[in-house]
Amino acid sequence: MTQISAQDVKALRERTGAGMMDCKKALEEAGGDVDKAIEILRVKGQAQAAKRAERAASEGVVASYIHANGKIGVLVEVDCETDFVARNEEFLAFARDVALHIAAANPQWVSEDDVPEEAREQELRILQEQAAESGKPEEVQRKIAEGRLRKWLEEVVLLNQVHVNADKYGGKTIEELRAEVAAKTGENVVIRRFVRFAVGEE
Image (cartoon, rainbow, N blue to C red; front, side, top):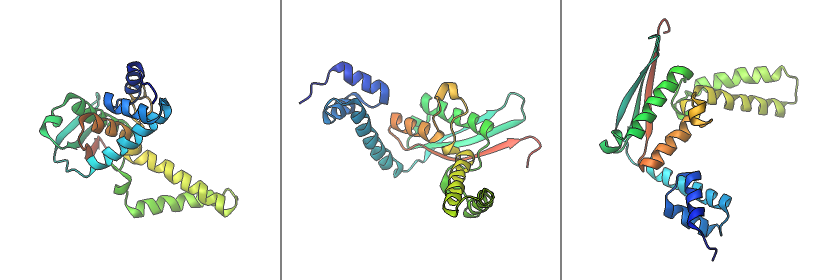
């Protein structure tokens, strides 16, 4: 059996944020291969996140953000399972950061499931027409339109968007940040809904 040093465990924990025992087990299972251990932790983390997602999130907070000029404001409801986590500073900071992001990025929907079928179809029709103008074979046109639809969903769906504060979050999406908070708190964390007000906009 591969000898796993405390240093290896600590390094893996720093890279993944997983618990010490989970890191040790993953390294043992991977025979000391760090990349393989990270993969094992990711798979386990996704399995745990899926289990958490089934639990009811009926506590939480409504966070707000008002832009300095007073012309843009956001209210967002972020839910968790217990009042204890709802008062947790990391959870509250996440909710505030989501409100700030919504003010700047102006998403239309929380998740892809919330995007109405007609809005998706309308966008796809436009993208297909644009792709047709390229004169490329139909199969290529279809791939172009699908790729652009994916890009559109990244722009309009909150969970798909990369957080606007790139310095702080280094290119992570809102969904990745939500999953991190869920992993740290051990609870199902859900961005339930939001509303964004901008002066002069309907």
